[in-house]
Image (cartoon, rainbow, N blue to C red; front, side):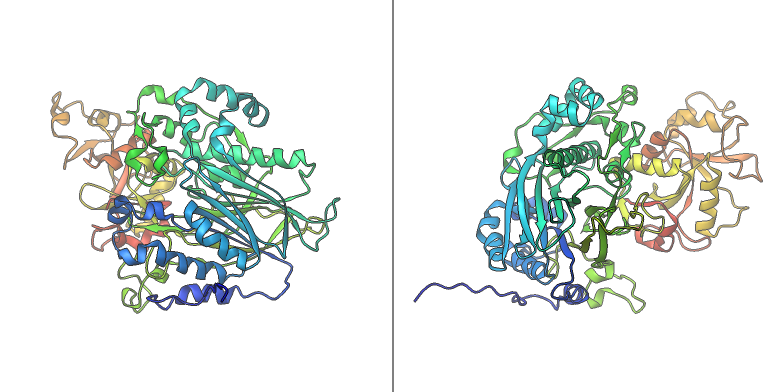
Length: 596
């Protein structure tokens, strides 16, 4: 007889109960025609990355080879995607071979059309699918970011003379941009059966991308976002649709909510004074042609960091603006994480939208830590006894999907457009790696009068800028510490001791001989030290340390001033030797850094 194919969307063999995924599906059940568009963005973890030794041994050491295999994960991902009844699905890290063999045929059976935008490596890329009963595709294209930055006239016209001239002069930065594999998909849709524009139908432009991953390359992601937005505005201008079309920007942006890339999207601009321009000045690309393999997760293949020098203060800086103004984020920039692997936990995935003509109706709740765990890993009060990482037997990717319902009300919106910048202060705090790539972020938080948790030579500490009255007060509040108990200072180099304490009586070279090291020097405070008046007001002395831990010294060096430091625990309780030991004060901190 004729060959026939049947695709099961039910549970596959050897899966756990999938209670969280099923619960998300149930919570997002839809009426047949509710007038909304449901949009999903999902980094599904490319097989080309998951099967590397780096992935198996470093990123995902806890998952079995069986559950990490694409044969298992693709079925689990299909179950998750189909259960949401989406209208638009934006996917990242889609293997080219699996797009052709698996994803495209499965979506076609459900009445979806789609296309893939491979990265320049062509091994994997972005894919977008849409429900043809709800949307008619007017145009679609895939754009490689490197080609935009290689076009000097396009840069001048759409990003401005200052950006174009600076990139032309900075050979290192322009060389990095020329090697980017990043692709952006653009698809312009008519919403079937709608009215709202002069053309007679509501229109929506969807962009889907996966930005460059490296933690030392925030500036690359910000410039990539600027190029994406400029290209989208130009695309609409060429069709006389600018201002008449809803915009959705989806994808894995590899950027935490407080970074410049997200600020450009959510706040509408990034200034030349943003700390990330200077922080990323040391990033460069090794002279090797390794793009063909596409193994972007193996960081050692791709980059090196030059030693920081005085000249780094004179770095390439950019003033960037968003041609669509301030975009809103579907999660309100509140998500604790969308990526959860051993060694990194953070929110990297987003759906941004134009708030003046798009209304967020519903957002599928994201998992919290206990949702990733088995029953045996959670205590009686809901506390996590044992962390479990992604991917797992129940979660097919190292990222979680974002799903949101939107209504397009181009002529009907009367309320002010929602804003999601800055990220809310009550956003859950999750630990970030105590690495050189986060030293400037930590310093910026201290500069703003906030406090951070971080590893020291022996235990974890909580720190504030020693010049900040607000920061010092926050330490005492977080620890519930009596004001009579003093705080110590930490500095980055022994040569700076005389800036804060009177070291005139010490023999030359003595301090440098023993520091950095496990010693605290008790000295009289200098009157001209610019230390906060809130720092140890009841004594004229101060304890000064130069720790051996490189992260804490890097934070101080980036801050340019001493930090006040004490143990990270409620006063009187046991000191913390692991980042989880002081979880009860995480939310008092701007960030918490995990030393491993």
